[in-house]
Length: 139
Image (tube, rainbow, N blue to C red; front, side, top):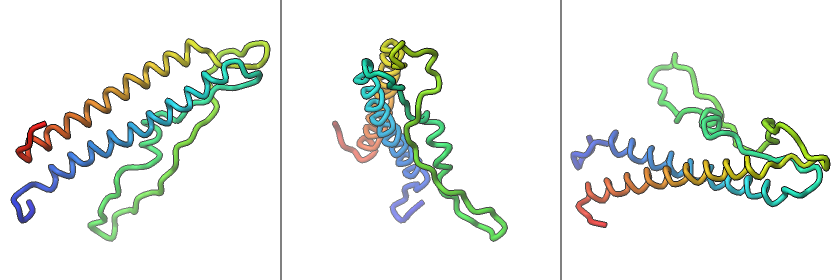
């Protein structure tokens, strides 16, 4: 507890959830742009669709939040990796012109991304509402 009597762990946990939701939204925005580029190139000869690393892989590559070393015998944390795009290895076939974009597959991925975006926004709104309620504010 701090000087005001509030729990720092609780507020840190809320901020962590908001930070995670914000990070997820950034990842979803990036994925939406990559999928839109795939759709835009559906008629480009020899174009191979791309996708971003899954969000789970991005979090795993970034590592856990930094931990405090409370004893000299504790091991230090690892570095962070950046997420990028890569050719989609799950492409089953290509058209005779070499284009491997499947509009059906891209539409499904766009729908999944839209659903995940709505969920991340709902989490963000919910926590912001709880913070407003805790502060005694309405709306």
